[in-house]
Amino acid sequence: MDPTSIFIDGTKSTEAAPGVARIDVDAVSSKAARSLYAARQPIYPKRARGKFRSIKWLVMAVTLGIYYLLPWIRWERGPGLPNQAFLLDFEKQRLYFGPIEIWPQELYFITGILIVSALGLFLVTSLAGRMWCGYACPQTVWTDLMIAVERFWQGDRNARMRLDQSAWTLEKIWKKTATHVTWLLIAIATGGVFVFYFRDAPTLAQELVTGDAPLVAYVFLGLFTFTTYVLGGLAREQVCIYMCPWPRIQAAMFDSESLLVSYHDHRGEPRGPHKKGQPWVGRGDCIDCKACVAVCPMGIDIRDGVQMECIQCALCIDACDDIMDKVGRPAGLISYDTFRNTEAPAGTEPTPVRFIRARTILYSVLIGVVLVIMGWAWVTRSTVDISVIEDRNPLFVRLSDGGIRNGYTVKILNKTHSPQNFRIETSGLEDAEVTILGHETTAQPLPVDADVVRAFKVYISVPARSKGQLAGSSTPMRFIVTDISSGAQTVRETSFRSPGP
Image (spheres, rainbow, N blue to C red):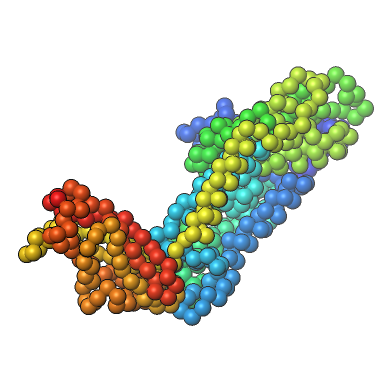
């Protein structure tokens, strides 16, 4: 056998070092090759083994486990209430998450969660680059899963390449068919689980099978089946490069202390094949085997420096460390490192990473402030909500005795799971007379059923003798709704309209 050649998976390859093949692969997603009009060049990621690949398998298992299993977890809330732990109940306009119940009037909690999530993403990016993209982003997780399925049916990189380049034989047809059928099954499961978040999962699953489910359930199941199959199985890295805005925003989050997957060119250059017995003095540790390029799911060469396409998955670190071990050189030619260290002159001692700095402190403080505000809002949230709607036509009515009357619609929302009685009162207007349509006196309890909104027509009359207290055409006043059983009061500001004093 040629001493400079080696056979890998039945393919003859040039040696980059004794026993190490130089993989014939090019970076198809480099900045120079990036174009909106160029045909996509398929990427065949080689299987990586190592610490970071194991972490990615673990994250995939945890995240997919949460997504697929969460709708099936039960949580008893009492008679008449759904027992699904996590449920977006559009029919009753409620969000359930364990013991937490959020009403439409409390969507500011969802806003708070989104703000904390965004700030958390900023914090992670400033600390360790696109770690979210490389490990936990749904596009990355499902693409990883689809590639694993493809590798299972078709083999690793070289086998998949040979299969694509071969004629359409029976073997190719069944391997391709098995791959796409498995992708579709995963996509159907993904779409099916998504709709389970909006209705009781066991009930909806049975309805989907029997054909009794609502049309909208089949529409969204089909939509998410299609998008999962296309984005995870077919588009893959194209989503990250062309569709996702985050790669173009991320640079604003980096600073000199951000940890990024980096190639240490001061140690690796000049690169080139290494022959047995050749000294390492006067040359770099990189043997130009291109293992780092072959394992990259984005099709880039990390040795070209920081690139928009890099999702910081660190598979190139695993590949390079494996090669360094084989050639007897120290690991870490590619590693997580900061701009400060990678741009330092050769021979400079690396400086420790400063995780606590102005940028990370700012993001952490903002996260803390939002969490405190949300916590305060949750602790002080009321089980009663009211809204007051003033009559607009007419704004006021002149009474026969010279007094002024305004009409209002007071809506009381009972957020408890049992009927409650309420009392409506006012303040801010002296001698004002309150009349509730359909009720003889204001002392009469106003019943509101559990989990419903009830509207009451309320008239406020100011007698002629008290018109002097009216400030111009609008006088501030308040409605006070009291829960008779608990004594808790809810207040809403409004105004009393009049022609003036």
